[in-house]
Length: 348
Image (cartoon, rainbow, N blue to C red; front, side):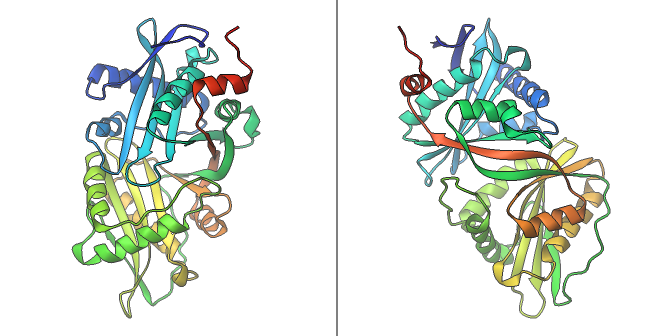
């Protein structure tokens, strides 16, 4: 349908992810928008975007495209968990830099809200990245989300490690060892790994984000490993106590296929095993694998809660530097009519 409240006529439709031409155009607009207002983004590769063609039994994506004069000028990615957190939706909106401030982003938000409400979702969360040294209100994404009625409920530092890097040579306790694996967790470790992944679900700082942790079982692990392998190389390090084989934590790095920058994803040290410098040791182990198997990498990105003092110390000591602040912006999903009334808009 043509959205009536944008300053230029735009038509918003659901994108066919199997349409190569349309999906490539969608990706190019998303890339241009992120490069235009982000200081150091970790860009989603086209290959990773094509993974949406294979439905995920645990998480569903819907892509919306805003077109003006037959060309895509804005995008929206609606992400919804399946089977848990049925009230919650992730939403990322991008508008081409040449078409910003024309109401296209708001039109995409209205179109997304209609679909999310029809799906029973009541809460929406999106990310707003703010360059270091900039007040949040001065950043376009933060100001846009605030104008829609969303508020910051959790803040993380976006950290970057330039490669090659030499981490600090601080040993962990002698009673521990670090083991690593790639695409698939060894069978004999899967149960223990799932327990740690479930612990991560419960421990990771989320501020006021309205999210209910789920149990990470071996079926979810299997599906996740198979899906990740289609778009990423994976490096996992785990700390194991030599005396009894108890696991004290894990760390995961993802390398998008064909891309020069990696993502440091989860790092967890189990509560009862903290204080042995396991986090630093596991990160050193993943870096050693990356240096050996992916010498082409130029950087690693990670995000750490501003309140997570222990992991902040580990990352900064490792050599990471802050490049942005990420605000998770959360709000109640309202119908477009209710949004317009709240904004003071009237058809008269």
